[in-house]
Length: 368
Image 1 (cartoon, rainbow, N blue to C red):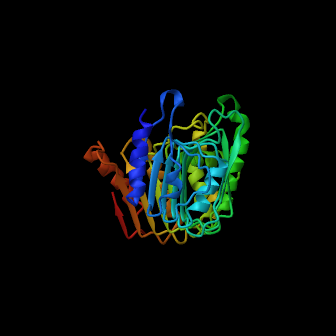
Image 2 (image 1 turned 45 degrees about the vertical axis):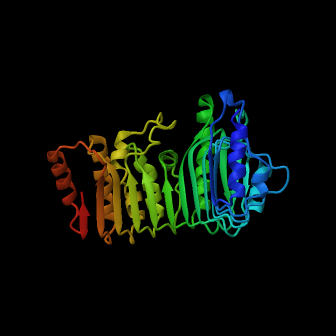
Image 3 (image 1 turned 90 degrees about the vertical axis):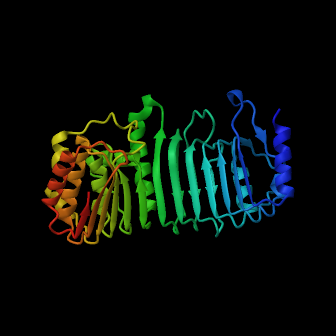
C-alpha cells in the first residue's frame, strides 16, 4: 500500500525539477510485489542528471526522455532488451550506467558516444533460468567496463570495444555442480576469448575466479596475451594462482605497474576443488621454458595489498617478489601494504623484511 506515497514523492521530485532522484526500495514477499515506476517519470524529468532505483518495475508505455541524465544506477530489477534500448535512445548524454542484480536482458548494444562507463554485477538472463544464455556487450565508445559478482548460468561476450581502456573482471560463472567438469572447457574458452578481445586495454583488473581459470589453462599450455597492458591488478588467494598470474606476466611485455591483492573477497570459488602438484608449483618460476620467455623490461612499480603476514601469504609473496626481481632490471619500487588491523608480531615482520632485502639490490626503494 506504499505505492501511492512513493508516487507522490516522485511526482513532487519531477515537478520540482530535482537533479538527483534515488528510489532504493526492496522486493515484497516472495518477489510478488514491486513498485511500478509512474509513466510521467519517463518523460517529465528534463532536469534530472542522476537517477538511482532498486526493485522497481520498469514498463514505459512509449519512449523514454531523459535528455539531461548522465548517471544511472539500477538494482534488483527486471529489464528487457527493449527497455534497455529505450533507455539508451532516450538518454543521449548518459555517461555512466550501473546494473546490479538485474535480469531479463541478454544484450547491451551501446551506440552512444557519451557513455564511457558501464558496470554489470550479479547478472542472470532470466529469473530461475534453466538454459544458459550469453550476455553480449557491444560498445565501441566505452572506456571503462566492470563485471562483478556472480553470473548465473550465463556466458559473457564482448564485441566492438575498441575504445576500452580500463577493464575490471571480478566475477564467477555459476553453473550446475554436476555439469562443472563438462562445462569447464567452455568456460576456459570464454575467459580466453575475453582476454583476446581485451588485448588493447592499458589497465586490467582480474579477480580470483578468472585467475584460477587461467591457472588451469596454464597447465595445458594455453597462454593469454596482453601486449599493450601497462597496469595489472590481480587477486592471489592460493599458491596455484601463481600459474595464472605467471601466464599474464609472460605476455604483458609493456607492463609498468603490477598490483597483487592477497585478500580477495572472491577467493573461495567453485574451482578450489582442483588440485595442483606442489612440486610443480614450487618450481614453476624456475622452469627454463618460462624463464627464457619472460622479460619484464618496463616494470617499475610493484604493490602487494592486504598483506597479513600469515605463512601462506608470506610464501606466495616471497616467491613472486623473487621472480620479479630476477626478471626485470627496471624495478624502482616495491610496496608491501599490510592490511589494517594486521596481527603480525614484529619479529615476523623483521624476518620477512630480511628475506626481501636479500634480493633487493637492484631496486631503488621498497616499503614493508
